[in-house]
Length: 90
Image (cartoon, rainbow, N blue to C red; front, top):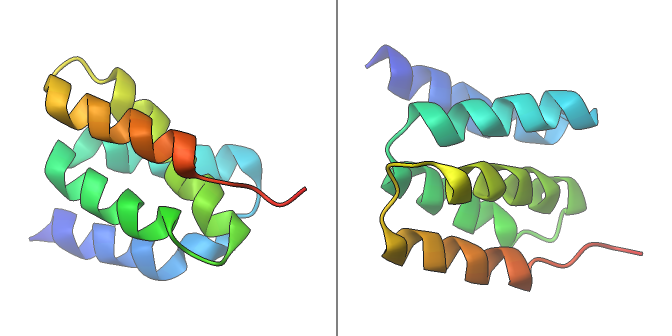
């Protein structure tokens, strides 16, 4: 329950994480702490956002999720595909 509340706070405030290290740290925590299916769903939604900061947050979280040792190959493949599709403004 407490972990769910913390995740909700992270989601509600993700656009405030504009500093690269802060954005990576929170995305890293989500990728490692929560089940891969939960992290994947969250980052998939953010990856499709019109907001570049949200897409960067998703990309960094997906990158950590991609290298987790306990993630099965189907999720790893989905993550790699999503990461390739994310575009950043020039």
